[in-house]
Length: 244
Image (cartoon, rainbow, N blue to C red; front, side):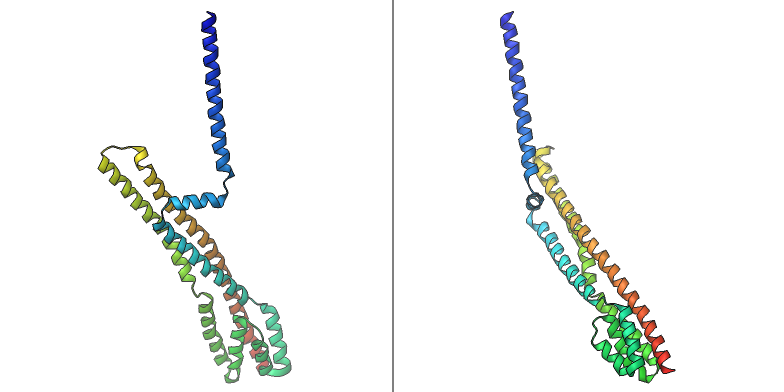
C-alpha cells in the first residue's frame, strides 16, 4: 500500500513537473514573439510571402508613396492666402491700376495668383475677354493640380489585384501537391496556403495606405479649386468696379 502511494505521488509530481515545464516553454515562446518588434515581424511575413508577387506589391507601395508625397508637397505650396491676395490686388487696382495689380500677382506664388495675372493681362480687351482668360487658365491650373493623381489610383487598384493573383497561384500549387500525393494533408499544403494568403494581406495593406493619401490629396485639390473659382469671381467683380 505504501509502495502504491509512493508510486502515485511520484507520478503526480512528474505530471505536474511536465505541465509546469510545458507552460514555461509556452510562456517563453510567447515572450519571444512579443519581444519582436513590428518591423521584424512584418519583415519575416514579407519574406515568407515570396519575392515574386511581394516584390511587385512593394514596388506599388513605394511608387504610390512617392507620387503621394510629391503631390502633397506641391499642393501645400500651391495653397495661398487668397483673402490677403484679393485685398492686395484690389488696393493695387485702386492706387496704381492694372499694371500695379499685375506686379502683385507676379510676386505671389500659387494658382490663384496665376489666374489673377491672366485675367488682369486681358483686362484691357474687356471684361468678357478677361473672364474667358480666367476660365481657360483655371482649367490649365486644375490639370496641374491633378497631375499624376491617376497613377496613385492605378497603384491602389492593382496592389490588391496582385495580392489576389498571388493567392490564386498559391492555391493552385497547393492543389497540385494534393493531386500529386493523392492524400489531403494539412501539413502538406499549409505552407502554400500561408504564402498565398500573405500576398493578399500585403496587397490590401498597400491599397489601404495609398487610399488614405489619395483621399487627402483629392480633398486638398477640391479645396484649392473651390478657392480658385471663388477668387476668379471676385477678380471679375473687381475689374468691373475698376472700369466704372
